[in-house]
Image (cartoon, rainbow, N blue to C red):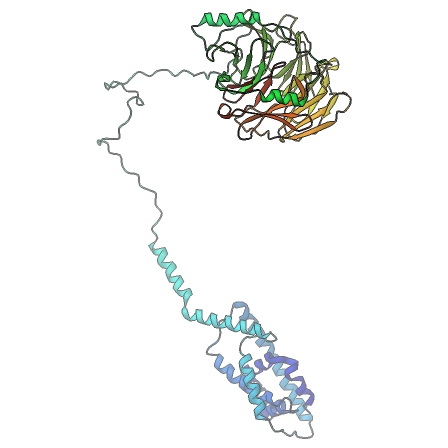
Length: 606
């Protein structure tokens, strides 16, 4: 009769939670069964034999439920809501189950026989349920999850027994009571009759006798320019390091009349072999007499006079000075003369190829001057106070026309034969900055400019004031370019110095739309902030070799062949202990002069 119903109430259908809820509502089930409650229990839980142990399970759960009422676990609000909802649902389901069972009982025509119960299996099952049941309010979990929930419950009970929340609340109340109210810091009262700190009478503007000084009207102070422009026009050639020795300076000026002009146009001269060239370089030495401080600040430009009978070295400094050093038949102190023709750095310096008694200097202050030693004056060739000059070169062999580069990227043409100090033409180039300008030694209508990262070759015959496009652009450089120069005799090569630690040599024998790159020489060109940047220049006697300073130790000046091979290194021992950034070679003699960033000139000679 109850076989189908007992399978409906089996453990596999409802699970342990259902029977646990039935145990928790045991009294309700008994009352719903009425007078025949005991028979209902037997018929429910002993019908079928397989469900016989369920009666003992329900009784066991009922006893456990009675015990857990006094020791109910601490539930979260969410768990309590879930438990109450489940309880109401199960009450309703249990009543329905009892009503249905009563109906089926009346329809039965035969009584059921209660089978014998295997007490040993019941004890084993009860022992298993003892270890698994009661660990959590929910079933269907893995053993690990039941164990974890049991640990959480035990820990919660333990901490609840400690009453930590109540203790923490009492401590917070005690802290609030002890905390003083916020109050501003009370400033100490000044003593009216007390003696104060000593104060300067000068700052109080009080005379030492105690009488107050009259108030002086404040006048606006004018900040003087650190480098004021020198007045326009010619300047007298007066050495700054010779105050009372005019006779010696006059003797120095007379020596210029003895200097004969030496032509450096020797394109027909054949180059010496590398073997002979190396032998001559090995004979060049330096000593204490050929090292001296010439200018006050770092040297930015160096030039050697082409004379065959005298050794004259000129240096342009960052302070605007131009220093001259005569190493022939002169002591160190007697042969040095320093002039101040400019107010800002002298970045370019050349002896005139047409007159050996003229030296031309260009400065950042926007002036280009010619020092005439025969008249002892510095004539003003060009002046532009609105722009800053960077470099210049001679367009004509007679040095009458010049091309000047500006820091803002402009190019100006200057004719010395016209009156005045203004330029003839101002051209806007395609470069944002121009560092160096150099004219082709043979085809003098071509000149090369070094910009920020590009090197351009222009034709002076096709310059447009509104904007000129270059004939050739060398775009192989990846960083800032310091200089670019044609080879001095034929102009068949171009050497550039770049901040990417490379010296590049190009083939300019045929100036067309593009000139190829021949050689790339790895060389450290990172001089830093306080040293003058390196500028690789050609040797006028051996135009296939370039000269450049070096950052290596011990300090040296190096010479490379156009193929990239190192030809020679100038070592000076104790006489060369600094970096010579700017170097120049004599056009016919084996003399090399190098300038460093402290104003010293180092001369290597036979």
